[in-house]
Image 1: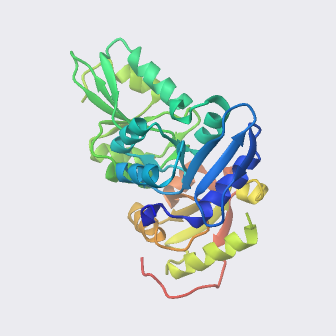
Image 2: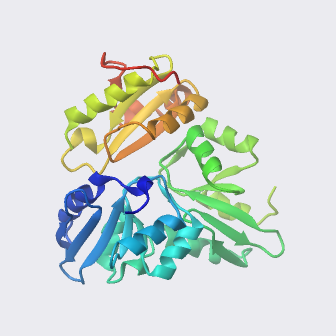
Length: 224
Length: 107
């Protein structure tokens, strides 16, 4: 059995029910008390998913699932706002397994024959915006949310991309606790709001919260 | 999703937290209210008197038997006032309107 933190007996049944309603899915089934979901797709090959709902997916979790779930194509984390560590991302990549949230799982099932090839529109948007920036010499994706932005002349900056609609003080403190180090939070949701308390919490810890456009502008200058 | 079951379950957990209206107010919002059968998750907002209390509550909730999949947002009453979240999202208060309860956690 996989690690107990990953075990939610309801998750497979719940995911199968939701996927069954999706246009690209012919059928989605899970055995009782089983987190494996077998998905027959209308226009692509069948896939095996592992459903869980956790705050964090780590490398050991990926290794356990790959070992125990024969032919698994992707791990689906139902938990909204859950995150994937950099080591887990690399372990999944090496194993050829996707690690997806619910929305991404729906898109990947529709668009990708091999689920591990899926890249979310948000990652494409952020990566392209940073790579095309005139002051940026390169980027490295550290984990699901953080990007190391290399600038030879101005110094490196670590940016955490937050997609929350409401970026509150407690959310900022959670992000600070969950991630090792970062210099800025990019509030990337164009319809999102950052509360005044969130801005203050970040400020006292030396972190700047910026909307996407202002972040790109700030990257033209030395980080202070 | 069984909306009445979700509300009863969350009210029980909220009562067990030992928090009263001055500490925290619990709301449901989103598709769980408008279309519970199709809801992808259970959107729960807890408005607290401080960020510290919100973080303690989040940690405590990890070990509670909450209905799943739960999506929790926490904010202080000042942040709620700034965002007008309850009004804009048509959130519905579910606690402390209940008298269900159990041993208090003393958060």
